[in-house]
Length: 153
Length: 153
Length: 153
Length: 153
Image 1 (spheres, rainbow over the protein chains, first blue to last red):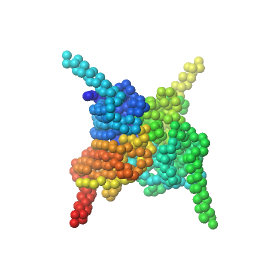
Image 2: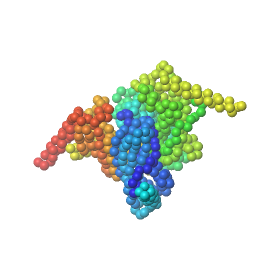
Image 3: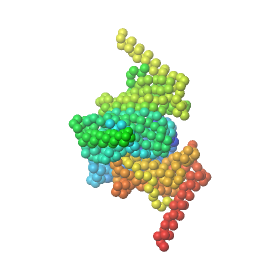
Image 4: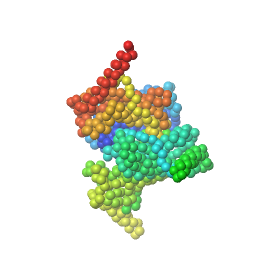
């Protein structure tokens, strides 16, 4: 499911994101993970804010980041993401943060989000967001298989 | 009204608040202004969150900051504040940001907040928050006058 | 000088920029002002980071913001800016923050920056950054006048 | 080594730390982890900034956080921390974020920091910071053993 990463967005490092080591402060990568999720949803055809407006929420339950190389002020950054795991009550995203100018991997990580209603209560039955992501994933898989077919002919 | 500043809180500069100039990034002073408001309210006897829980809000309408000297990581900072102006539909706070170790003024500024209901609609009639701050201010004034009396005897 | 505002950048409101009033927290507008400065410089032909690499700095001395309408998560935001005043030892920028979908003005403001060396010492003589911005401004003015000529023929 | 957590600091949740879910935004917990490290060092007798002033740095190489319960605006928060692993070129801290009013665990996590010089180069030989933390850990262990002795007599 979602074998390959999608380029979700390109951003510029903001001055406010640096710290006195002259690199991006570690917590800001979690902001970038959120941007990646937002833009993945937009690419799938429905903005995340619409899901939230309907009373669906994806609070972060776990977050992990491995910092490989520093990002610096004004660097152009690529945010890559994919769905690593989809369950009725949770979804796991994986991220790759890449320097756009040289392709260097700056960080990778993942977050696990709970699927809840607007009160923060875990959803149990198959809900609209779950079905939507599932169909997106299946579509992507089909397209990859078709691409494989073409390559191996 | 509120001639003198009150020491609302002492905070430590966080690493995340610095930028690559090795000083506190300018926007963070507005966070410190908010802490000052929160702690002034607490000192007056009612937490700001209680006002907000009752459907009252104080969105910032204007903010100004004059940066005099840099704050650095791990500096101990004093947050001083006072009410500069109170109207039914707005309240203006003034702030002084001071380095606790040498008393140096780092910045001063002010914010003007609108007094609104939970929908963001401006309040017109005399509301509970207005009356409360007014009584706090009058108490402070009375105490200052009494102090002046004692001094001039 | 710089009568008209330039569209410096378009950004999306990040989830991390919202607060519990469900709108963008006031301090984040100062981050957006910084992005505007960065992108104005890029548009003028030389990245701000290059100036800083050469030992030039523009610490914020004053900041003002007037909040007119709230920005919300995922809103597309236009950052407009212009130089309002240029002196050897300071430069004043003005900003307009606009909702891209309906053109509504969300906030406007200004910052005054000191022109300093890498130690934070004020520059006195005419320095390279001053001359550069001056020539940019004069070019813009000339182009505006030419445009006026064309219009009035 | 460092079996038990130390209460490093108590902080108040800032308005700026909330997001539109009306809880603390996930990335801010990494800021709180940093505060914990800073205050642990202070408690051990030498401020982290002094280490950094001498050309020693602790950039974050990995970070993990498990979010259990939401923190809200104005909550009083306890930051607990301990050293989980000490090597010449890295140190791992563990954290527990607790609501001070009811003792509820809000989050726990860990970070692994690299021990580098001011250029970001990994330190290989036994350096001053390593020896210092080692001696702190051994002292704590000795005191725990003495406490155990007293208890078992």
